[in-house]
Amino acid sequence: MSYKITIQPSGHIFTAEPGETVLQAALRQGFPLPYGCRDGACGSCKGKIIQGKVDFGSHSIDTLTEIEKTTGMALFCCALPLSELVIESREISAIKDITVRTLPCRVDRLERVAPDVTIISLKLPTNERLQFLAGQYIDILMKDGKRRSFSLANAPHDDELLQLHVRNYPGGSFSEHVFTSMKEKEILRFEGPLGTFFLREESDKPIIFVASGTGFAPIKSMIESIFYKSNMQPSERQIVLYWGTRTKSDLYLAELAGSWQQSHDNFTFIPVLSEPMPEDDWHGRTGLVHQAVMQDFDSLAGYQVYACGTPAMVSAAHQDFIQLQNLPDDEFFSDMFTISSSASKS
Ligand code: FES
Image 1 (tube, helix red, strand yellow):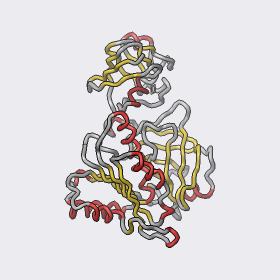
Image 2 (cartoon, protein in one colour; image 1 turned 120 degrees about the vertical axis):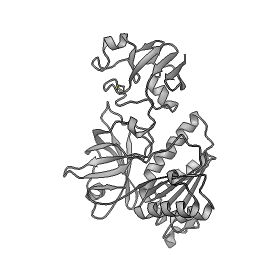
Image 3 (cartoon, helix red, strand yellow; image 1 turned 135 degrees about the horizontal axis):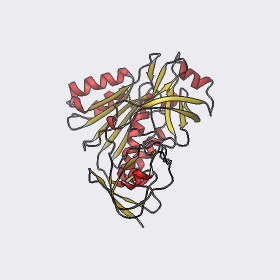
Image 4 (tube, protein in one colour; image 1 turned 90 degrees about the horizontal axis):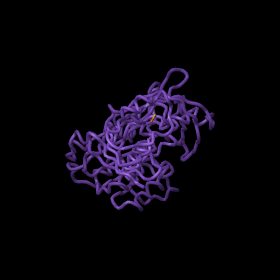
């Protein structure tokens, strides 16, 4: 039997299907209750049952004591509804709600998807999950004390593995390691989630995403998150993705972006090559990716723009969209990849 659950103080309502924990049901329907381990160990998901009954599930007795249970507290990652519920919980809607953590992880999979791009899939310890907002990044903590920043390319709901898109920068010690000697099962440590490049979901303005190179990674996370949520709450928000790379082989997940266009009427994918090779046999758009946007839109006054990639692209887009295309300054969100040795992002 399914049960209706009301969150206070927001008043949001969702439904738990048989066998679903309160947290699983909330996340499935796009209500981001806080969580950490999803395993009854960390206490991040602890909240109050104001009305109704739950099976508290199996959890650490230190994380939720018997006394706490008698006062109505529960761990939502373990609690199975036994009736309609009214619960009290925060909902994650901004960076300030998210805990930055330092965690170990294991390299689960390495995939070379372009001559100079590798996708790394990272697995967290069994009892850990990372809560983040689509678009945020993590810092890999290297043994020599340096950090290397990478955007998370998986969407927050799809958190079994964390996905990073790593570009091979000559002289970048971490990327050289990835491309020459990294093996599956290697253990890494990271800090995150970090950054303020995340989707502003309260807006209903149409969105233009502009990516260059591996700047596609956080945008992939945002787009997959939008599609996931629109399964629960249909959204008419129009989305256009411009993805600029040098050659066709650099468009390392073009098929995926193309498949989004096939399955979502409100989504358009426009790949743009700056230096197509003769063998690319390219008949699509060419030139600088942000200029392709300017060719297609007379005015960006009613839009939101999310740009991620090289500093040159992001700076040019910011300046030109605002000065020449009437984009309001506070509707431009960006993350740029720098390649300094201590804190670089790709
Ligand atoms: S106890 Fe860690 S998320 Fe529930």
